[in-house]
Image (cartoon, rainbow, N blue to C red):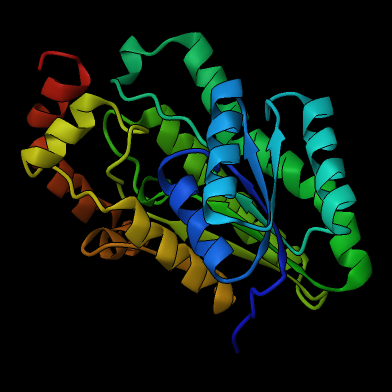
Length: 269
C-alpha cells in the first residue's frame, strides 16, 4: 500500500537546512502542500527563497519549538493556510558531541527539549484533529544512536532513545484509529548539524556518513510505504537491532574504538 503525497498537507519542522531542506524539495516535487518551519529570521528568509525558487505550494512558518504558544501558533497558521495537517514530520533536532563529564547543563536541557519534548508536544497539537478525521501520520526522525548508546553522544542518544520509545508507544495506542506513526533512524549525515570533529571522525573511518539528499529520499519512501520503522545505512541498521538483543557484542566492538572516540570527543583534535 502506497500513500499518495500529492496535495497532502505536510508540516515539517527543521526545514531550513541539511536534511530538512532536501526533504522539503523532495516533498514539493511530489506535489505536497507544505508548512515549512524554521526558528530564526535567517532560516525563514532561506525557506522563503527556497519556496520562491522552486515554486512550491508552501507556507513558511517561524517558531521556537521550546515555546508552547509558538508551537500552537505555527500549527494554527498551517491549518489556516491548508485546512488541516495530514502528515507531521518532526525533524528539528540538536546535537552536543562531547564526553558526558564535560557536558554543559544547559545543553542537556536544550537537547531534551528540542529532541524529545518538542516532537511530543507537536504531535499532541495535531493528533486530536487526525483522530477526528480517522486519518493522518506522525513521522519522528530519530537516529541510529536512538538504538545504540554511543560514546560521545550520551545526551543525544538518550533523547533519541526516548523519541523511539514515544513513537513505539504512540503507534500502539493509535492502532485501529487510522492514524499511523513512522520512526525513521538515519546514521550520521554530512551536514553542518554535525560539528567538525564528527566529520573528521568520518574521514578517519570511525563512522559512516550519508548525503542529506539520500536520507531525505529514504524518509519520503518510508512515509509513502507507511512504514512503522525505517533504519538507514549498513552496518549501522544491523547494529541497531543487534544491540537490542546482544548488547554485549556491541559493547565489545565499541571498546576497540573508544580511545579514538575519546580523542575527538574531548576536543584534542
